[in-house]
Image (tube, rainbow, N blue to C red):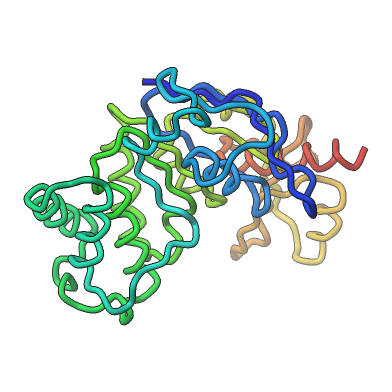
Length: 294
């Protein structure tokens, strides 16, 4: 099972480069596609889901070219776009039944699968209520269910935890982990904690370009020994931000605890800290922006 993204580029009239020479080779597991808003994540997801075509490059799924044979991906695809719409007058059962028929499931298959998925996304008590009355988080859970209707081998989810409360977010992360054993799962987000909890590999993207692709442990090792904490007064924070890459602040009784990524101690009293993926992400994005300005 292999998804190959080979030199994919997408450009528009008003935004010349939404993606630029993006290449990845993926097998079973969860890829966390991590980048700021506007980085090109959703464009890549739409191309992989065969919703739009790349301007250059190619996508292959188990050797089949997605442009020449898009059904090769579509037959085995589960896709949750960032902007997921529903029919407000339908119930979850009716809505999922309609989509199950479109995906080729028989009535008996659809009924069993819908019952399983409503339990999985914690919507059994709302199964007979119109979707128009659902909250944003509840609609998102319906979207997650529809993406899994056909038991897909390739799962693409774009900002899937938007609107979910902490409990539902944890439930969804656990679901992605369970799915990853024999599936290729792509999780696109700008929320580092979602990737940290579920991803077996991480691709950092900015400005439509792939900055780095590696296992989380490898990325963390790359910044080991370069994360520091300083305790300062509130009036010193702006000065630190101008001189150093500040990745976090916490206010405590003894002052403001500032987290800094640097190759050397930013102050004589700085103490080393264990790195996090947020440190990795912010350093990589910051370096990319500096290179772009240069």
